[in-house]
Image (cartoon, rainbow, N blue to C red; front, side):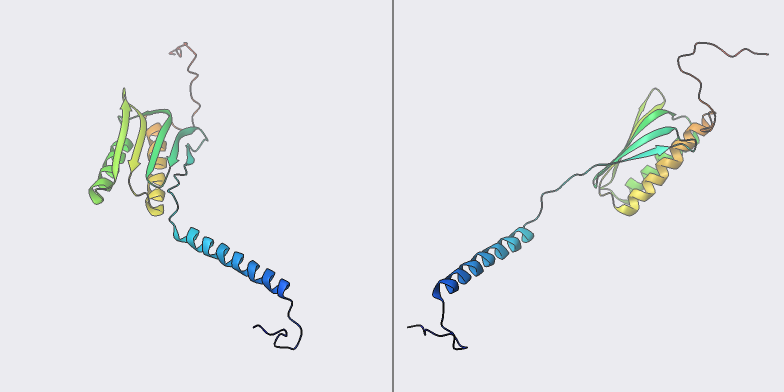
Length: 166
């Protein structure tokens, strides 16, 4: 039979003690649930980040869509592929696939214009920095090497007039 007094000599309030034990039991269950939640792996979240690549004059050249497994550069302007920077980019991406067979690179070309470039695989932060830099350098040079410097004003595409030869 339980004693009617606590260790300090005060009378025991059984109703308060029962409430306290009930609270402790609920807290224990809540802590166990938190541990179980922390122990279960979280489902893969594929958050996409978009980075713009602009020319030095501020013209949008491409948008990079970045996830942890894929990087896709969508050209926002006409980027001709018959130049040295594009050849360098192809060689650079080939060297990436030669170093790591799990990395896959694709270049989408249509009528001698680059439409997109994709890199799939484990995109680490270091590789991401290198790829962003490579795409930025290449896209800026592709415009310059085509004879249209990025700082020069672009001709209006709607104009049908031909400059007069003097």
